[in-house]
Length: 155
Image (cartoon, rainbow, N blue to C red):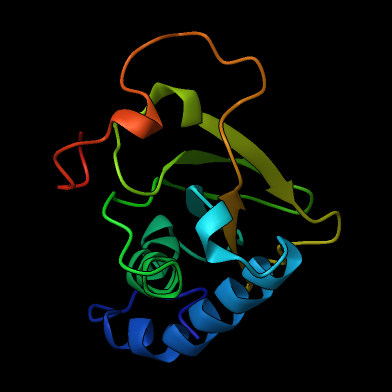
């Protein structure tokens, strides 16, 4: 609804997106087998069509991130995020991280997303991503998932 014009107050639209965040979270969890205990990584992103602005993609921060955290049972870490303005066929590397500790290096990764016929100038592609486990053959050291101690979202 904001494409092609400047709107000062966008924050009300975050409330409108909350059901979408919950729906996509539920579908993603189901696609990964339905057992939230096996899901230990996540990320989110948005590609805004060319008639929009980057701030329109930022509308996804609360509804996308909090929906996943709620459905995964009080995940502690911030949900990594990326957004951009793009035309037809634009692709986005959605950053991924561990759900309970941002410093778990084995879960630093990304998932490329996009659709060939979008986003159209007045559309936004919103996406959520979840993972079950670390990168294959990870060996960069650092905090291991089984060694999380602080439960503050960092370490």
